[in-house]
Length: 278
Ligand SMILES: [Zn+2]
Image (tube, rainbow, N blue to C red; front, side):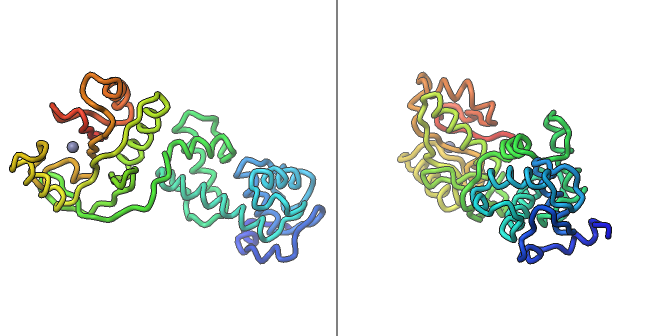
């Protein structure tokens, strides 16, 4: 009986309640081979036969995933589920990067291969259509750092309100997703260069901006933009601590490197105020 992709689409973790072993053959094994192939573990021919090639690919996958390292030489339902999760992650990541892998369902299809190819082409990589370790690392790099739990708020740009999602960047401060990722990467790069910077004031609500503006009018606070008109309310500006003035090593570092991360010092007289402009 030929083992087709159609029959494989009905495969679930339950298909491996009875673990598959060397010498077995089934549509479920074919699907596992497909996933191992897509994830760069090279199972030889994707044919549904559990042979030596399938086994060596399976061993490589188990070595990379400590959760299934002790599952012997069989394909168990746990191995199958973890493979699906690994595929789902690749699909989800490619989807967030705009490479459209089709349905994010943990099944390796031609759409998944196509999305990997598009990503590889865009990043000047060898175009294999397989998301092996090297490609997965590049995907992670393109995605940037994982951000913490977001907060939904009302942002303002040019006096106009809009719904905004902001992400934590340390010290209880928040920025818009793209600015947050770039900011976190910039602070890490500064730290590697021996420059310790920290967040003082990022995203501000209308209430917070009103208070700062009032303090400015009263002569008790720094220059603050009119409520509704601050880049802090758009989630793209950060007042950075640890700079210490224009002539410092920290300022020099920012002046030389911030632009690479998309940040510019855009208010004259405020060496601490940096805005993400991308
Ligand atoms: Zn500021």
